Length: 246
Length: 368
Figure (cartoon, each protein chain N blue to C red):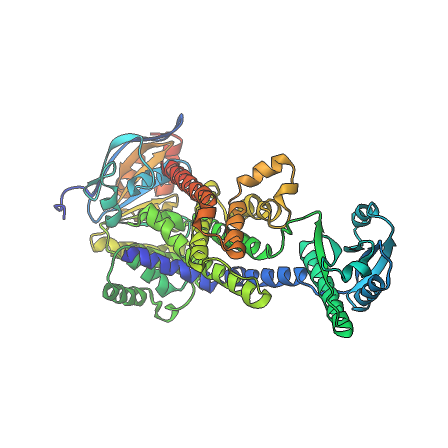
């Protein structure tokens, strides 16, 4: 266990290029334990590329990066054990049941049978899905699936959970409910790293990093960003940043 | 290991939940065997024959009459010389020509006996074999009755000649051929589709982020199909044997071992295909066009390789089923052991290695 004050994610000068295209340009940031850290940006701003590198799905071109105290260049196996991941595309298996999905991912992350049983009960109780235990994922509404996918992504109690546009395609109310889950999670000192292009979601983050064309153009709490740009809400901040009115 | 087993369990769930998959896995082999089996072994009725009688004595007339009254055969025409034979066969209606040599009745009573020649159109090998067997049986029957009547020693030796396809390739070919086809279908097509599905739905990312290794993911995907393919191979052999009497002359263990090698090869091809495609549909098209169709057309399953143009012969040498069919025929029909098939086995093993290495390289490139 790392000490409380060391960053959970520490990124220095992270760069990723695809040929001549620079997807991430010398990103530098730190994320503290238990923080809800947001990456805000338009499509193609480089958010997903960054998340993929931090998760070990893609190798950076250069930079010094540690996740959960492990180096992405050399210790990707350890990193994988200590993170959870949920992507913008739906990530549970539709043709098997709720409980079977839980059991599968519990098993993949090396939980014992007893742990799986206990955590599954707890998880279904919290989501109010006890009666849907043996329902196929395909027949659950999208909002429920996403909450379930999130809960399963943290079933092994990882240090960090990466959410890559987790609420794509759902209405604001369901999004709000989803965020209640995220708050609960952050309270148990699981760090939440989330990418989004929804402004209401951006407001919910503890700290926010605004990306544009592969670069970090602003990074602070939503409150201070609004102050700094003299804006009413994040939407205005984002528009001002995009128009480069600093 | 536990992670791995968990993954295999999930993969099996996918298969057993989806009745369409199950239908492809088990319905098609049974349907194919039945279809091919019955199409090829259909009973003889109204087969057209021609008679070339150089002797025209009472024995030859009696035999001809017996053949024609058996119900299996119809006299299409009588020939005057052997030169007409080829033309008759080329027309395609006549399936057999019965040739009596000069002085038949007289020769019958000699010690050397009389020859009778049965010439069959073996382009349809199975029918040819049946036609010749039936005719021989009728002649034998005639001979026995004559011997009983006259209590004199007599002898007729039927000589069989196969036109177009002298070694009768094609007989029993359908069991090895169907094995070759079904195992490719199940192993390569199903694995490539199921891996492509993970990519399409985005679940592959979730798996790659998990502590599962890439090799565990691939093996986990492949294991259930391996098991199912082995079951399939065994059931095809059993069906062929029980329903159509296709024997396994050689070692069952060897046959099973060879099948497992072939299945393994098909799986590596499936994995390789899955590294090339993004969607299930692409995977399916690739498998069908680069595996299924060539298997049916070029592997020697239906059309003899010897009759193909040279270029297609070379091309067919690149197809795993071609070698597998040779091996299976060799074991099932000729009872050959390892000594006779090691070359083909080496080719299959080499191909597996090639695809394994290529998939591995593609997989790494993709992760970069």
